Each structure stands twice: as structure tokens, then as C-alpha cells.
Image (cartoon, rainbow, N blue to C red; front, side, top):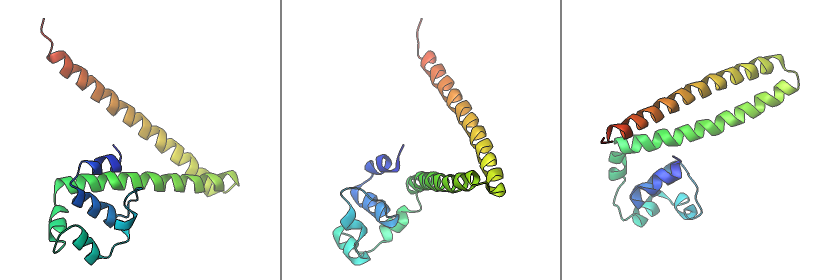
Length: 134
């Protein structure tokens, strides 16, 4: 699930707070990202950030945060991969070794993900089979 889809399920104030905090852009929120703290509180009809800071201690917030960070890490990995790939093509020995290691690690990660997906599909199939009556 993308961070934007996950945020759609939130109360509009929490969604705006999270997007403002991490500067997550959407076609409709540019004005929110540029607000001062005082402007945001007035817009959100709140007197302080206490309710938002308390929300940051919840599982809901941490699940969103982890989803956001996973996406950020994927974008960073793409950037690193592009840099390493370009240097490897130019003959940089360290970059070639790192490129080959990245390729190996990515293959191992893909295999692990495929196994996890296969197990989840098998569990779903078992759950569906359990509901059948003969």
C-alpha cells in the first residue's frame, strides 16, 4: 500500500499533520506544507500540537511512519543504484564490486519476498478451504 492510500483512511487533521511534517506533496496540499505552526493550528482548529504529539505515540502513527520510511528508502536505493551503476560502467573497481554485491543482495531479497508471498497465498488458500462445507 502506498503512503497516499494509507493517509486517505485518516482523519483530515491527522493526514494534514503527517503530510506537513514529512513534506509529502499532493495536488491539493501545497498550501498546508507552507503554513507556519500557528497558521496550521488555526486551520486545523486546534490550540496546540499536543493531540498530534500524543498521536505520534500510537501504533497507527508508527505504521504510517514505517510505510513512509520504506518508500523513502526505496527512492534512496534507486539513487544509490544509479550512481554505483554509472561509476561501474566507467570502470571504477570499487563500484563494480559494489554493483555486483547489490545485484546479489537484490536477488536474495527477491527470493525471500517470493517465498513470503507464496506462504501468504498458501495460508489464504487454507483459510478459504477451511470455510468449505461438503
